[in-house]
Amino acid sequence: MYSKTEFQDSSFIDDAEILGSLEEAKKLAKNHGAVRAILDKARECGGLTHREAAVLLEIDDPQLEHELYALAKEIKERIYGRRIVLFAPLYVANHCVNGCVYCGFHAGNAAMCRKKLTMEEIDREADAILALGHKRIAMEAGEDPVNIPLDYIIECMKRVYAYKNSRGDSIRRINVNIAATTVEEYRRLKAAEIGTFILFQETFHRPTYAKMHPKGPKSNYDWHTTALFRAQEGGIDDVGTGVLYGLYDYKYETVAQLLFAESMEKACGVGPHTISVPRLREAEGVDMKKFPYMPTDEQFLRIIAVIRVATPYTGMILSTRETPETRRRALDLGISQVSAGSCTGIGGYHKEIGQPEQPDTAQFKVSDERTPDEVLTWLCEDGYIPSYCTACYRQGRTGDRFMSLAKSGQIRNICQPNALLTFKEYLIGYGSDHLKELGERVIAGEVEKIPSDKIKELTKERLHKLENGAQD
Ligand code: SAM
Ligand code: SF4
Image 1 (cartoon, rainbow, N blue to C red):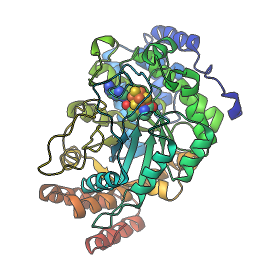
Image 2: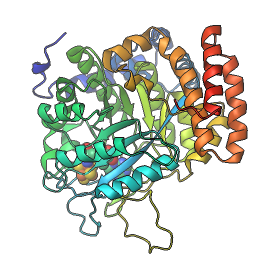
Image 3: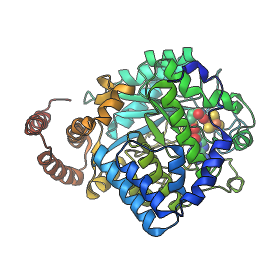
Image 4: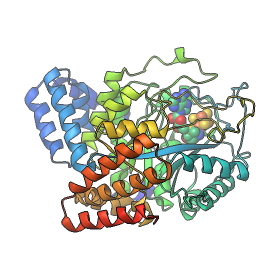
């Protein structure tokens, strides 16, 4: 294992290595035997190197592509079963000193109405998010040390955790997606009971990074690229990464993303807890003609399948940036967490009846505008089990403890019953009549599939207790 302090700079993202991998992959992808050997290795669920994954990005034979997709589906089901974890973003402030050319919050966007939630507004947002049935949020903010210092983010976290709605429900896990910071500040986030610290790399390609981030602290590639290592050094053992697809060539970015994950595992003993796959969306004050690298839907699904087979134990997150149809196909190929009912503006969940429409504060436009109840109905109809489980986090199963459980196959045994119990809680508290009927049928069928008789009986007992008013 490397010492963490070796990662003071980001030279481990080696441009020549990435380009070399893609060059070699073009040749190997034509050799069906070589491709099938990689697929066979992936089937063991031990993961793939970035070089092997590069080959899977390059295959263009339809039969091999079919085999890759079937394998992605098989691996996903083996490790995660049919459960899908749900969450919602909570945007608390949109001030920003950076110039990210793709983002509606960039400092030069004078038309953007800047807003920062008060603690009373945080309560109202928490209440509205709970009313949608959520228990897990991703707290989001722009970067502005004066208007949005870390003290403010921590105050928001404490306020959200402390809020209880009229049913006695509260948000149980807060993941945080804010700018790169110091080890000291990561320690403070850890002390404030952060779930996962999420930071998207945006692009690993240095010249593109420089073009996309012309001003502000985020323009420092080394500082940004090493942030998740500092987060781990600060005691946050669940960290989430992601490329913003559309900024540069998707094959380069995916190979670099996997190289990043490998480097993190070597340095910290555990790789990223989650990989998100955001794809660029239209945003106020952003000129979409500046982005010629947008992957097509087919390319986007290939990316998801390749990441799934290359990092089988890493959660994969897909947001409402994608349409319902793309989300449906992506779930099959590897996604384990989705957002639902999302609002990317500041204070957008709570709606005052009779109040005039507020000025637009949204970071970008979402493509899936369905309510969580509609998303859950769709998940059930497609054979998935919606899950609001946060048990791993609450019981300290994070970082390498989570990974070793996942690798032993135990997560599936623990997760499936928990998914059923938390879905039941949703139905009781927030489900529509239609979903209640459908959901009860799903739960009844899935309980019977629990292999251990002991766990099956325990789950039935707990479901019964929930019906009688108990809480998880
Ligand atoms: N401001 C922090 C940062 O940039 O790291 C926190 C995250 S920002 C609120 C959330 C993420 O939204 C960014 O990391 C970026 O990848 C993504 N994003 C920005 N503009 C976008 C757009 N137009 N379409 C889709 N995603 C976008
Ligand atoms: Fe600010 Fe983040 Fe948007 Fe960049 S992506 S402009 S840092 S909010």
